[in-house]
Each structure stands twice: as structure tokens, then as C-alpha cells.
Image (cartoon, chains in turn purple, green):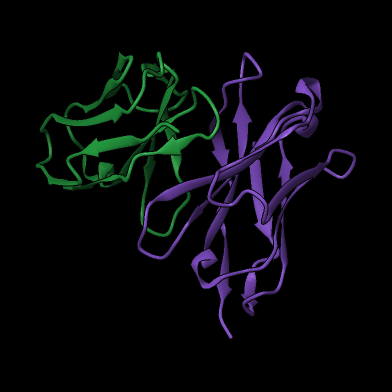
Length: 124
Length: 106
């Protein structure tokens, strides 16, 4: 059974940094991209970033709204993906989801399995 | 960047009804479109990919169609469990983006 789980969320002060992690099971982690989304309280889903599998170069992609502050990475040896957020702002308060990025071409990705999400609250 | 616009933003329907949700892209995206269902407090669930391909395990009363800039999600024979918010997402290019969501009340 394919499963993903996020961890590392919590209450963080504005201006600080936070690293979320995503662990996966039930499939060969290194063969798939990992896509990250967030959902602010009462709002819709927002895609924030993706990291390709090593097969397709392992390169990251970011939404314009987070580029420069968010960094996606992966450690295939440990089956982990990470989302690092710097200079946290109150607007970053959200549930953050990791998902498995499914692709055939290596250029087009949709998310077929999702974690349950990790809440990040930015407040002093 | 490509913007996705869904309509309606919310709707109410009865068990057994047929429901249609529309998604428009600001530029052509071929058929690189996915639909997700999200229930309160839960992670999204993939329903449709490549505009019309039904994800494994999703009931056949869900269907998707469209190409270019206009897409629809149809739900036939609406069931009580179909409540939630539905999102379209394009994956034609980066940055990817989602519609604002359509809240369905049964």
C-alpha cells in the first residue's frame, strides 16, 4: 500500500526557518517525483514545489510565490523528501502536503497519492 | 503563468442528480489536467488525470472531458459520499496551478 506522511510541522516564530519532511512506503521512492502543496486555513490548495526523481535529473521547480524562500530536496537513500521554508511569514500558516508525482514524460506531473498533511503555524 | 478558473464556486444537489463542474485554463494545456476531491480535514484524492482518465478505484460515475482550455468534471447518480470540494489542476508546465475549488453539498 502506497503511503506518504509528513512530519516536522508546528508553531514557529516569524522570521525563523522550518524543515518539513516526507516519508514514503509501498513503492520505490527514488523512482518518483515528490510534489508539495499547501492549504491555508479555509482556503484552497496551492502548489508550492516539486523535486523530480533522479531518473529525470532530480531538478526542483517552484511556484513564483515561494521561489527564493522555499527549497525542496530529497534523500533517496533514506526515502525522504524535504521542504525547507526560510524567513517564515504569517501567510505561510497552512497545512502542507507532500504527494507522489506521477509522470510518463518526465515533464508533466500529477499527484496520485498524498500524505495527510502537516500543520505549520507562524506566530509570535 | 497559467490561471485556472472553476465554476461554480459552490453548488447543492440531490442524491441521484448529475452534477457538472467546469474548469477553464487561461492558456491551452492540451489534456494535462487532473481533478481532485477533498473532504474536510482530509488530504485530496485523485479522481481524474489526463483530463478524462479515471484513476483506479474511483467509481465510474465520475468522468472528465475537455481539451485545450475548457474542461468538465461530471458526476452521475450523485451519492451522499460525493460531498466535498473539487479542484482542477493543470500540469502542462511549471508553475502548476489549481482552480479555486468547487464546494459540493449533497
